[in-house]
Image 1 (cartoon, rainbow, N blue to C red):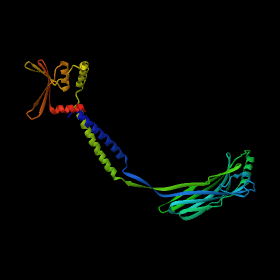
Image 2 (cartoon, helix red, strand yellow):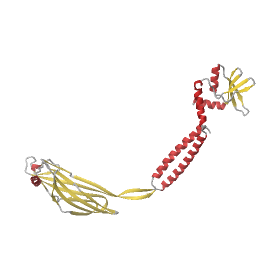
Image 3 (cartoon, rainbow, N blue to C red):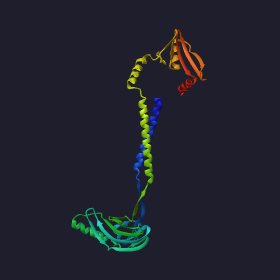
Image 4 (cartoon, one colour):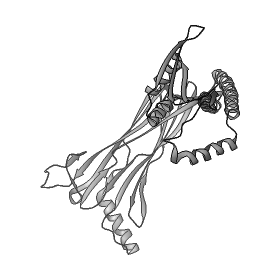
Amino acid sequence: MKRSYIALFVAFFAILLAASIGGLYYAYQTPIEAKLVSTSYEYQNQGKFDYTAVLLPNLLYNKTTLGEGEATLYKKITDSIVLNFTYTFNSSKPSNITVSYKTYEYVTTPQWTKIISETPEETFNTTGIEAQVPINDIPILNVSSVESLVARIAQETGIYVTQYTVNVTLQIRVAADYDGGSISDSFTPQLTATGGDIISIDGLENSKTGKTTSTETVSQPWVVTERYFFSGFFLASLLGSAIASWRYVKHSPPPHEVMRDEKIEDIIAPYEEIIFETAGEPENKGATTIVRVKTIEDLVRIADVLSKPVLQTRKTTIYGGRRIELQVVDGNTRYKYEAMMSEVSTQTAGEED
């Protein structure tokens, strides 16, 4: 087998070997047992504050109350703010729900924080997928009382502030027992009223979600089959690659011959136009010397150099094949090229490609 064909086999098995290594790596990276995580329970905490501002007698609005977002709250004409809160718990499964809550109200400045009031803890129980708890016992936010408190603390500390914040925080704890488990969570919504010439209220809506998950271990027997397959594929590719490489090396010319051929090529390079490679030593038949050349191209070049015609002879072999003989006659020397017609056709097709 020609060395060029063996090189193709070497490349082919090298590709197969790389593919088998990739498949083997993937197979051993895939676990035989997989963990599947599924959600068993989902829930959501939602809270919404609502307020009504009680106004002092005024010319601006000509009324004594303002609802949420109805108009701007000016501190000098606002007496107090009445707060309400609605808590809603939604779940994905029917549950026994217990809600406990407590309210804190405090004033905070960059320098200090002071609790204004807090309510006792209350508890609410219900059953189902939803629990809605209206909380209407939040202490009223009295603007003049807060102003007076801030002024007294400023007088005590000697640090006067022009702006403060009143925070209303609910600490809510919810517990839910459902078929298959239970959850316990906390929810801390907070409303912020920023004091100044204009009272700004933020944090009216709050929400928080949660879920519980379960993990199940699942066997993957196909991974074992895949590992066996790619192991066999790897061994076969490795063996084929080794044999092809061995054959390729075996058919390599000895290093000294390669070096010698390279030196010869370097020597004849300047004269390659007038040097022709023969198919053997010249033959002497009587007074005639026959030189057999390797290719038709070499024969044509010789004819050009000698300015002689190329003579063609066709023969039929004893097996019925057609044979062609080309020659250039130069006195007692004949330059010949002989080949079967099929060989000439193959060479011509290869040159055209």
